[in-house]
Amino acid sequence: MTRRAASVFITDERGFVLLVHEADGKHRWGLPGGRHEPGESIEETAVREAKEETNLDVELLELIGEYRLVSAGGEALLDVSVFIAEVLSGDPMPDDDEIQALGWFDPDKLPHPMTTSAPRAIEDGVRGERGVTRRIVDH
Image 1 (tube, rainbow, N blue to C red):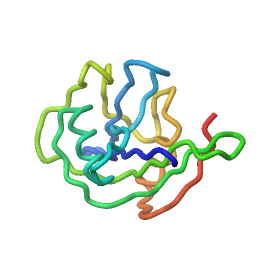
Image 2 (image 1 turned 45 degrees about the vertical axis):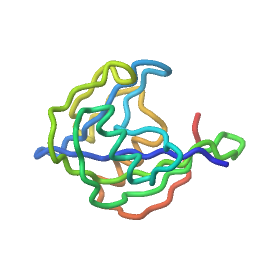
Image 3 (image 1 turned 90 degrees about the horizontal axis):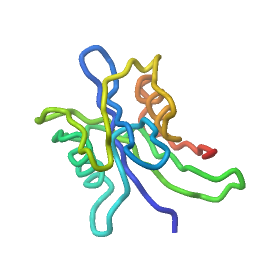
Image 4 (image 1 turned 60 degrees about the horizontal axis):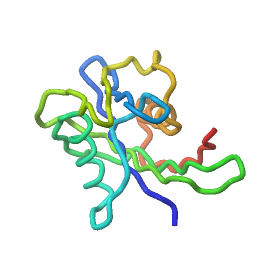
């Protein structure tokens, strides 16, 4: 069974995207999000992870898409659902356990390295894509 995860795409009034920087692992930048837990919907995962990683309470507005990360050999590794979200309350701050920093970035000037699905999801979100399904090879 392929693991599932959810992320949120949040923009500010300038059109900048909120990204989080992993505190461990590959120390990549990506959209706030994380792994799906048993017993919750994928939408609940997105809202929970946004709160845990950024201290923001969010409302999901639309599904940008489903991103299937596959190995170079074609094995499914992770299915990520990415939602457009609106901030309801809270001051953005990293959780200090999983996330070492967060920031607002121009979609045309994203930091590196990035998680596998984030660049494509950001591109789709900025272009106004909705309900897309993408297959992305994880290198």
